[in-house]
Length: 253
Image (cartoon, rainbow, N blue to C red; front, side, top):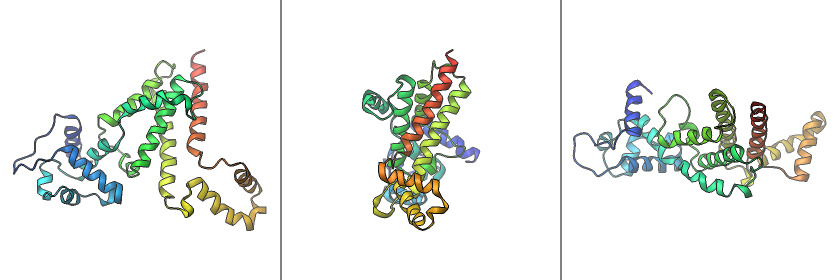
């Protein structure tokens, strides 16, 4: 973003409701504009979004749209804010966490588990968010609300501010990595998830060259016999939380 785009995004995301620049009244709202962009991105990806496409979706001219949003960078910022789930919705997940897969330990661990799964579901619902939420950019109230919830979960654990921030980045990075893998492998044969597709592809090779990779062949054979596919998100999350648990315990001594 340029400095002008940065300032414009701050005004749109954090300022009072903006009034359009001079021109005929069209009855547009920033929320409606953002949701139109979200609909296009959900169907075609972020590359399908343009000011022209959104204007056509809203049945207005591109010039009319520019009276509300100065360009695509600011439009995408609004779209991210509209597409992210409301962090307040995590409360329902916490209420049901006792029946979830990441419940051992309670407290901060339970909260981060619910947070991570909620973030993952947001990426699954809107895969283009993976592309739109990287790099230096302006974050809106909802996105900062997600960060606030994760950091608040670690409050009182004895971690420094830097350690808490790095812990949240670590969890978010794991979630993003699994979501990106799933996105890259979407539409695979048989509708399998990424783990299943990987096993199927490796299986073809190892049927012929398995003697060259005995450890890999044994691991895949165990997966085939005992199951355990499509658990990369929760398995990795549990291990990260285990590690954080050790650090929290050390700080409490």
